[in-house]
Image (tube, rainbow over the protein chains, first blue to last red):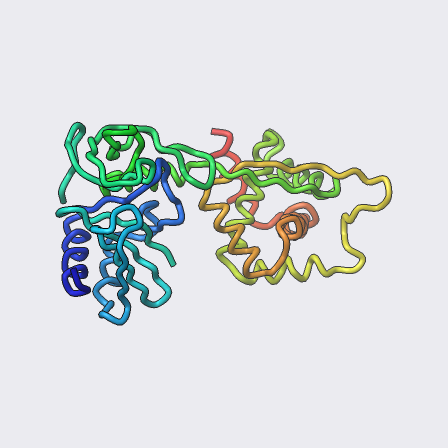
Length: 94
Length: 205
């Protein structure tokens, strides 16, 4: 999945609130979307501003078939992946 | 908006099992990773293999935000006794019936004011530079520990003040107490007395 597809799917997930936050048994307060410090609308605006130069992707360390996408723009760091039709945010911070 | 429901099945990566696993949504208490507090009874996805919480749907964020607002953070400073006495005197002037809890509320009020108004920060910086320093420990003056618990929001305000003033936490608290002394204890007509008396009445419940 390239940048365009990842961007389209994450925008769709944010708009519909159909997303989850990947956790390790605890709530990471530094993840600003997860802790409610920033809204999904604010994250949506940042994602919309991103182009391919703001995007990198790597295989997930637990499962190489899952691609982890990272968007870096204006000091924001947004990291997510997809499992089937579900979007999972790993981190949203500044 | 898609709402996940209890017993709904899904898939997620489990960091404990180190692989993609089947999950089942259920209600759990989930702790914060870097501080006290737990979010009670939020819907989460639980690993079908190890029973760990592996993901949290977006619909649980309002409950997380509310819990975060009320989670407590301890603040502790060790001050020369006169600083604590000034704080107690100010609390007494505002409300002679005030309990010791009110002095913490009074300090919180000043922390909030200082974070919201940069001029208060500048003022406490200048008060701390006064020579000779007021209330500073002379030999034989005991020190007292001031310990109170604050909400994450107030903790963030303290962090903002620390960042803006480049002062240490103890010095910020000292500076705020000096400002309280200037505003409430020393003047014949304490500043904002009516507002502070209303605050004391609200705290007293």
